[in-house]
Structures are given as structure tokens and as C-alpha cells.
Image 1: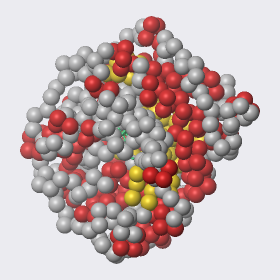
Image 2: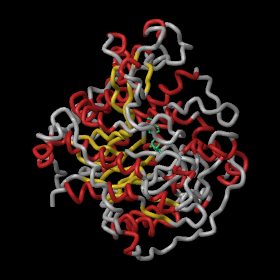
Image 3: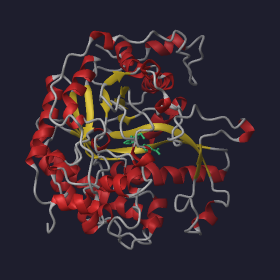
Image 4: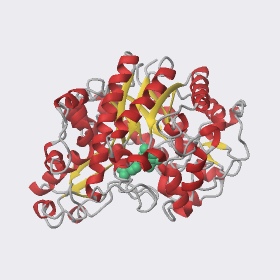
Length: 539
Ligand code: PNW
């Protein structure tokens, strides 16, 4: 490769922090006192929705609620956010090691994932804990740069052995492992060699990585996510100037070059996976949320359609609706991106077994102030090319209220909007008609100001997040009782972790992590999530 992995670290990242505990720790039994749920909120359940007025429909609706026995559920994480052990056992650097170490201010207080939750060494205890509280599945991601330190070329057996033991430990504890191949941690070498996702060269490398992982773990893992939230990670392009290989592709076009590589990488990986593991469930994770036209104007409904097209549709139309981009997206990308070939469209169509969606929130959508046409005519308009505005507030004519309570100010994109979840699920089912149903593969809430709390009991009593899960699970049950085929849920997250640019200042964990001692504690929300299944899952 012309450069050693050590040199990659030294030249582009520099020294990394090392945890005190840096060998695999055996699990100890979870104390039974840790598994006592919080006292109930007796009036927590005001059933709502168009067909369930509190007095008359409550019990009727409620008896129709249940999760079928086949319903799968668990908690989720991603490698860079929880693992730590940044340089250990042959891991190669990723763009995130550079972003956190070198790009001043990229993360809050320049926090890094060097140690994070040290799950690379503490996984046995983490799995023992989630098993003890009754969680049937754990969804984690594999770090591409552990398996292939350069992203291509030599394979690192030590990393494969590590993930093998992680998977075996899950199975030993009766926890189903669900694996994501890519959760944003792009091997740095690939970014510097050809621009990462901006180049179609990445497709071959990704498929080879997938092949190695599928071959090794295909007999033990049956649910696979290829890629997590391309809408988010493709929009990290352009990467900050001066740290990575520059490509000369205009900034606003870069997310779409990335998108095309992602679609092709996903589709080929899907086809390979189904060939190697015919009984597996393979999908990619979309994200976004329900989009409500702010007013009933024609402009707002057009803008809302554009937001669907440039959001979920960019990924879901090619995979669920015949292989190509939505018309509005194609209209834009055809000015610079090569069209997908008939063979590629054929490979894409039907390439996700379920519609997996990380459905945290919903938002109101409206036309830009200048109007859609003027925005489309001005490539430097901040909303170009989507040309749709979003807000979390009702219009002033309706009082300007929030759609629902805001999460931590560090996550301004997130408001609790659980009242819209049933409509969202209907919309996904009606629009993309996923044959295998819908899975909510991430949902969660950054409890406001949780990082300021110092008393463990106060941290564990995460009322906002608890109500979020309570209402969210009811919303899913409501939608299912109305005929929406929801097949699974994965809550974000198993533990507090590195919340990307927010560092450790925003908490999404259903377990608190003391970052000094690495001790974990269940929060009330975890019990609430489990309770939904204790009450409603058919035996
Ligand atoms: C997800 N949005 O990201 C990621 O998959 C996780 O890694 C992350 O920790 C979690 O959500 C919480 O942020 C998202 O703007 C980031 O709609 C942004 C959005 C959605 C999901």
C-alpha cells in the first residue's frame, strides 16, 4: 500500500488516548438490585389518535394492540461511538479519527472516540447487562478499518477474531446479534486514495469487505444492515478542507456522488449477501421522518414532496420502486452524474428485504421564502437543491407551538413527535410497499441537559426519554393495529456514547456510563422500553 498503518496514524492523526483496561474483561453477574424497575407513572398513558377518543375507544383499541411473536427488538450502537481501542489490535485510522483529532472544534471540546465506552474490551459485561434486563437483540456495527486497516488489501485476523467472540458472546447470552457493516467510519486510506464515497472505486472495496465478513459470520448472523443513514453521512461531504484528498467536485454535488456510490455498493452487497446467505434479512438504514406540509398551500405540498424525494426517496425509490431516483432528484443529478444503467437499476430494484428506518422525529415542511422556482434557479441558495424548508413549530396562526418537546439543545434536529409516528408508518407502507415490512432501526431521545446532572439517581430518572419510548411504542402498536406491518425495533442506544460532533455532551443512552470508571447504570427509559414488550408481546 506504500505506507504502513502506523505511518497513517502518525501522519494524519497523531497520538491517541489509551484506556486503563485494555484486555477483554469477563462478565460479572448483574446485581439483582440493578434490575428493579422504577415506580410506575400511573397517569402516563393518555391514549390518543384519530380513532381512540379517551373515553370510548381506549379499551377497544388497546385490546387490539400486540406485538406478534415474530417481532424482533433490541438496542443499538455503532463502532466508533462505543468501542474505543482506537489503535489497538491493528485498527486502521478512519476519517473520524482525523475529524476528532485534527479538525479543531469539529467535536465539542475536541472529544474523540479513542476510549469512548471501551466496549472493545467490555463487551461481555455489556451483553450480560442487556441480557439480564431481557433484551433479545443487540445491533452493533463492525469497524471496516479493523477488518481491513486500509479499507482494502490485507485482512486483519485479530479483528475478525474479536468480532467473532462478540457475536458468540451474544449468542451465548441468548441475544441475537444484528450487524451493520458501515456506520460512518470510513477507512482513511480510501478517502485519501480516491476520495472515499465520492468515487465509484469504493464499490469494489466495500463489496470485498462485506464478502470477508459475510463468509466469516454468515452462519451466525442473519440480520444485516449494509449502510447506516446515507442521507447523513453523504452530507458530511465536502469534508473540511485541508485534511483529506480534495476531489474538485463542486460542494453541492458531492452528496450525490456519494449517494450513487452508496446505492451501487449497497445493491451489490445485497446481491452477494443473498447468494451467500439465502435466508438472511439484508437492508440499509434510511432516515428522516414524517414531513407535514406547514400550510395547505400548493407550494408547501410541492416542497414537502421534494423533501421526501431528496430525503428518504433518494434511497428508497431506487431500492423499492424500480431502481431509479425520484424524478426531482434525477432532474438535478442528471446535469452532472452519469445515469444508472439498466443493469444497475435491475440490481437495485428489490434490494432491501425490509424498510429499515431510523425514525427519530418529524418536521413541518414548507417552500423557501423566495418560492421553489427561485430557489431552483439559484444554485447558491442555502436550501438548493432540495428547496424545502423545515421547522419544528406549528405556524403562528396555530400558536407557534413546538411539534413536541425539544431534545437537548445539542441535537436541535430532534423533537419528540411521537404523535406523528402512526402516520409516518402508514406513509412508508403506502409509498414504498416494502414486502418484508418496516423496522424502526433507531429511535431515541437526547434527554435535555442530562450532561449537567451529577447525581446518579437524577440521571437514571430520565423522564423525557421514558415518555418518548412510552409514547413511541404505543404509536407503533396503534399503527400495527391499523394494518401497518412493523416487524422490529432497535432503540438508540444501549449506552451513552460519542454523539459524533456533540462528543459526550449529548446523551442518548438507555444506560448511563461513568466515563471515568466505565460503570454502566440502567436508566428508567430502558425499563419502559422493555415493559412495552412485557405487556404487549404475544407469548
Ligand atoms: C443517528 N437527523 O444519526 C445515528 O445513526 C447515530 O449514530 C446517532 O448517534 C443517533 O442518530 C443520534 O443522533 C442521526 O438530523 C443524525 O435527522 C441526524 C439525524 C438523524 C439521525
